[in-house]
Image (cartoon, rainbow, N blue to C red; front, top):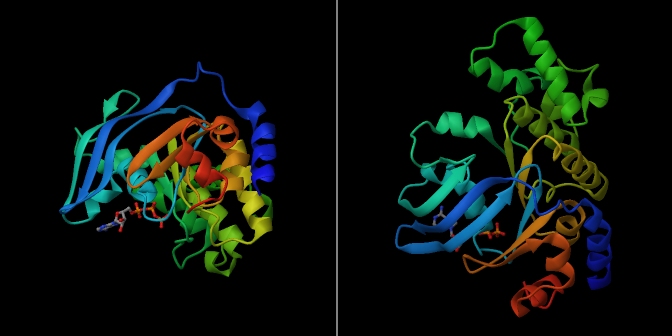
Length: 270
Ligand SMILES: Nc1ncnc2c1ncn2[C@@H]1O[C@H](COP(=O)(O)OP(=O)(O)OP(=O)(O)O)[C@@H](O)[C@H]1O
């Protein structure tokens, strides 16, 4: 397994962007508390524009909690307190109360497809309609563009009016990605988007993520080490709510600086 991860990381080296990549999200000394319990400790990360950043680490180490701070999804949980600073494109995301605007700019794809029991078309058009877009031609074009962007147009173009829930799990997950794209975000957060998928669907979603980074900044939580090595440019290793190491993915998987990172990526714990 170690060999495989290292080999894939070596291939991925070609994809690693240069050091000149622009910062998109700057996280500075972030702490998060669920009531009395602290879940994130002094997290600082510089997430680059139009790269894929993977968050890895054992169960319960704070990956999803961290991901949710980036579009303030934790605000929905009672008793959550956050300190520190997160800026996206230089704007402090906790300074404004316009979370709708933030969540339009920072879309999210979840572990399990959460499509509505409505047609494929209506699922993708849902967000734009909520934003007031009513013109049929505009919506048609947006739905097609989003489905193409999620690499599923050819599979569904003849059944747009049928229920999205009739699709396979992998197709549903790509419709979820289309629905996110339809909101024209800059950043897409993905929380274990392939963990419920079979290997072929997983590969399709991975290929899609690799294509999508030319247009979007992507932050993905994954338990799948090969996946992180295959698709990400940067990897952050979380442990007990802290970032132990953050670097180019090939460094994390081939020459990590911290022993704990090495133990984790070589499967010695977690
Ligand atoms: N709503 C919540 N209320 C209280 N504690 C929570 C809540 N959500 C998460 N936690 C705690 O915060 C810590 C981090 O959890 P989180 O889900 O972020 O970890 P994770 O690394 O994403 O785990 P996994 O890989 O299993 O999804 C855990 O100790 C968890 O029990």
